[in-house]
View 1: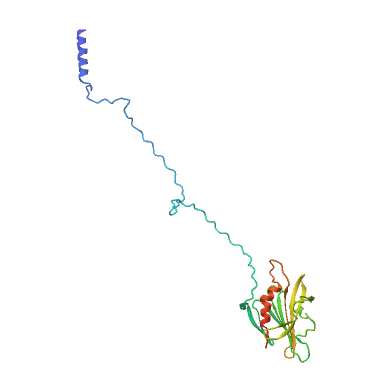
View 2: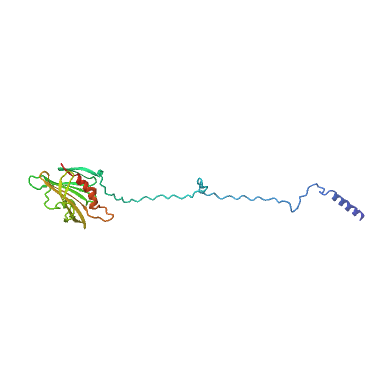
Length: 251
């Protein structure tokens, strides 16, 4: 037993003298404070980037991006009716015309017709009728040379292109008129019923040995409603009839 005790003491002394152990290897600490090795997770694949709208450029001086408004495509413009053209009576609207033994001016856009008739008497030249009609086919001006009219308003049907009955109109109209060449005419105002509306006619007649009988007649609706495309008599007279009448000259 004494021997065993001595052996244990020797062993204990050896252990205390060599803490690292006989192998010399440094033991791996098992302290809880040891930093564990982290395992790196696999990087996730990013989803495909979708097309994003371009970042708007800030408006100069404001630092704010403008709000972009989509510009709508204009629809095809529908055909609009033409705006009505007002009646004008400038000198550029009138053009010269020469008939049998006379000259005058008439609106360039008016339609003109000429018709020769039979002589009203032996040894007399044939009658010559000149008709100038506006685009409305109602407003008109008539010149009839070597006419054989026997009654007031006898040429009204030729002016209107149909059979119409007329009565005396504005009695305040002077019974005579004078054209630019100093020739005097007898004058009368008539009212005819056309399409259930009053149609005013002014007639001038002159007879002499040199030129025979000449009739000038012009007319238009006496009054028209608002928005009507046909001018009334007063406006048409001031715009066209008076300049036409003033330009009439025998030659």
